[in-house]
Image (cartoon, rainbow, N blue to C red; front, side, top):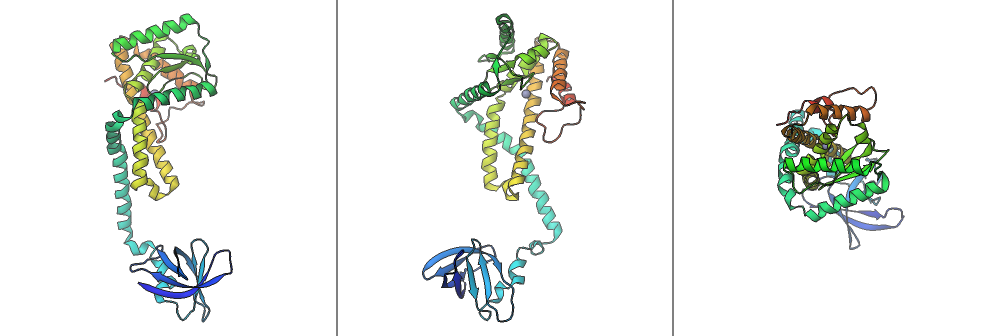
Length: 337
Ligand SMILES: [Zn+2]
């Protein structure tokens, strides 16, 4: 423990008071210094120290704006600029190849953790998410969408019943239970689309029915959405993001700064999303094949959807790291097994 006497000046004030600064054993720059101002104790880290200029008093600036002036003759050697700043320099932490090795090791551990460990851990806790939570999420998502982007369907009652019957028969044959209801809406904003709410229903938009080259194509999309619900993709994502935030808080990407934490999260979750899309495509193809559906109708539907949503000239470029869906070529090549 080292002690030092000086004059304390409060931030945004000219009031001074005598102070005793205490540096606990093992103190390094960045650690708080204990400032005892007439019995009032402040623990403050140092922000800056003025350079030595002859007999001029030295100024220690603290985080928060408070300052302490110390007589030049009293100023201790361990606080000299060269000494206290050097601790932060990388050179003192080890040679560059050790730093590089440390970086690579950290990256490998984080990568393995998020690709292998976290999904397995999260999948095993997925069943503990209460059904009520997921049901509420489905309900509130639908009502938000209904308020903002969805409008009532223009399909005739006959058209709706025909699709509902076909989807019901498809699910019975595939052994999906409980039955996933089908809801009809339209949306100029979303265009040709269908989506599954966390625990159903599947919402299908008029624009998708209009775009479909065949009814088998529509059934392909519905099968894909049903597979998302069947594999509990939304639930699993909930568990993964909960666990990810928890682990991130403990010892994750946030140590590299806010932006890299966000970047890492996007990267990790678009990877999960692609994994789920591939799984949904595989299962959908299995079901369709087992019921003698023509898989080329599903392929045509995927192509039609792709050209509807992509920006001209629609290159089928390789999947980017941040894409949430596999590329069209990848999706068309997915084998149903
Ligand atoms: Zn999907």
